[in-house]
Length: 509
Length: 124
Image (cartoon, rainbow over all chains, first blue to last red; front, side, top):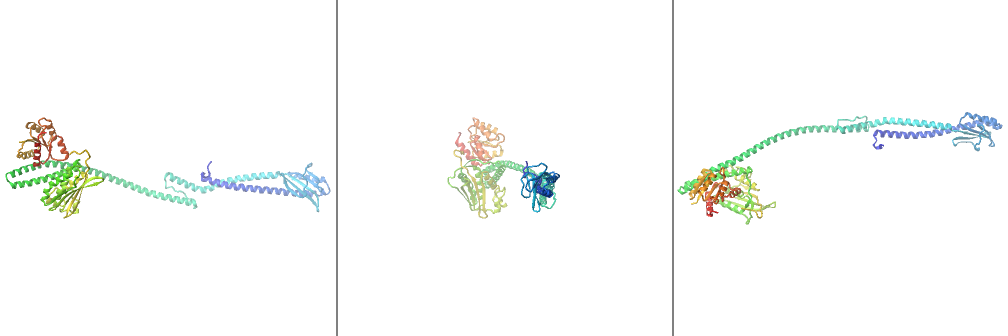
């Protein structure tokens, strides 16, 4: 059985209307039947009384003349009334004077006054017969109520029939009424279901009137319109976006492809360049070796034979050859670093030995320009695991640079230990009181073949590769080089290097 | 006077270095490649070998190992001559049997000092 709450609206309305109408009809029918029954009984009683009066009046003479036969005759006229069961005429003394039907007996005791009452289904009437203040007798009637029962039964049948007809009518009417109420709602529900099932926001519910349902339908349609509008807008955005994405993707794809090709080309060129430089450097060194050796030989011979001018000139050839050699070596090293072919050695490095060696080697060069060259480092620096050759190369570059760009000044190499992320590092500070550099130049000096000014190389010599190579070597060793400078006051180059300790038990020289 | 075998493929370098050494009183034999170096070492029994590592064909390391394997030259002092002086180069030279190491281009004073030190040490 369906719960009321779950019933379709249509059945709820029908059921409600039928219940209400049915209850009203049943109540009113019941009231009507009770009223009708009462009316029938009253009418019946009144007619019985009238009959009693008529019979009484007719019997007055018979009673007065004590004519029982006449009285019986009068009573016999009762037979016209089919309901009449018994009748009796009492004389003034209360004795039975005449009866109907003939032979009837056992009448109830005489009542003193007039009386009309229903006694166990029959109507009992007592009526006194008067003649000028004298009571002549009493008439008694006992009338059956078959007619009443028949009438009641008919009444009931009629009422039930009416009730049934009215309920049917109510059902029919409720169908009409519920259609008026539910049809727009069902319509609305159907549209809503269609919208939610098919995502079809173009659907619209039909409005039938200006009642609350009409308002609901309007609101619902308005909502759908908004959704449809937004959908359309979104669709437009999406289509546009897809178009845009597709075109961007295409552009990116093309750009990527071009980049890849460009990258491969660049890498090829870079490899070719590195290979070329390495080969060239090697090829250049062989004849240079010969030049250097023959120059040495000739210088010795010139000195031996006392040709001092030749010896001095050959010294200049020697110096130029050395310069050329350093340049070639720098180019070779740079190309190796760039090609990723250079690796850092891992050997025990004694910092004090490296520093002393370099300072010793560079002191003559410093002295040539009237500079003092000093080194300071804390005593007892422990050896570390690193690449002494590259450290020497970097320090040599930085110090020879400092000596080159300083005249009658000081060049100082200071070594300071420090900790970075709990690991031991060394800071090598190369400080000079030379010509210094402006900020603009500082940004460029680590680039290949760049000196602070174009005129620099002419005036001071140098390859223009030293700082670039030094920085790369520093990076190869896990460190870095920084520079600070004030034009006219001097420059400070700082090399920071990780200096891992030599593991206990390890470390062969 | 001590005799030296100079193994160097470049004719000019070999000539110049040989003459610089000869001026200092050394007898210098020249060999342009590995096989001839081995042959000459066997024949001349030099007091010391100057060995260019970057030889074409049989390289300096191979020559050094071959010299060490022959009874006549097993103990001759060898100084390697290389273009580069990285730790790896030095280790490779010492491993193949060289006793010392000089970077090219040769500084004659430094080379002579090394030669004299090895000769003074005498055969092992």
